[in-house]
Length: 398
Image (cartoon, rainbow, N blue to C red; front, top):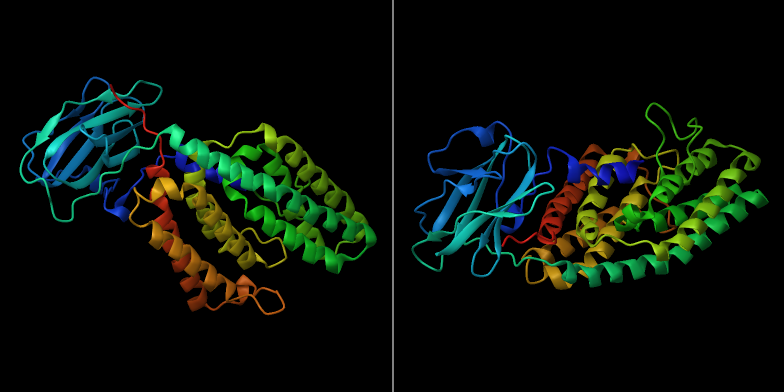
């Protein structure tokens, strides 16, 4: 499944180091460069038996750390103010034995590293007193920790919005099934697009949809196309059939199945819980998927409506961001810029929609147009990237 598999990538992959460099909180690099010794960097250990050791006699200003995970499992490491609990540096998914460089500009105060090994209690490192001035030019803004209680109302708000859209989605796919049953395949194509875009705007909830997401919007198996994959159902199977000229009798069972699958999702959704941690992560990953699957044409099964899908994905990111505004406003200085970037990206994408509602095929764009579109979406992805880290509930050390 495209959505679930890709949305799980950051959570478990070796490249899942989160950087908040967009807001100036931390600049992180990993790989061979991060392992090169630097005379101005403190070598800091991050382990179960020694967290945060190696940082001593620091002065206010720029602090650079080469943080090495000395344990046998991955862990998260962050630097916090002892007085306020504000986080100044956050390194996620630091692999066993690996070293990652982080940098923060901090004023005088008392700080400590906190190590969070997988499946272990948080470990607080020694308190380190930073001497010097208490106001530093271009200082890294400390991020107040987010609690689960902060996120629960946002999760409920987003869940209520999803629930309000499911009847609309149901009406869309029911209309599609009726079109196919009556043999009006031209109208079926239009209703397919309406329904597909509605579903593509619900991206932050895919994790809560479970197996229904695979049935409704799954991608063909590796080495297969949407047309010849015998196990594929949902929007992409219907897309392939409708735009390949298949007869209504062949399409009808898949249209009826989609209608039934959406009905099942709608009936079950009130019983599921959207993980509060997912919303911030999904806001970013929705557009990562748009870059990987839509703007490359990989998800096109014949309709050539990738740009319409990207437009729906931008709606989805904006809707996922909306319930987090109260959390992000005091914590993320780039929030307004992020929202403006989403709007600018949407304006650019919608410039390829004609007055009659048809969309320019991705394949018809010039190289310059595609590069501009990729750059605009990529810039928006970068601005959304810190949201998940800011909204991450950190286990507090005693």
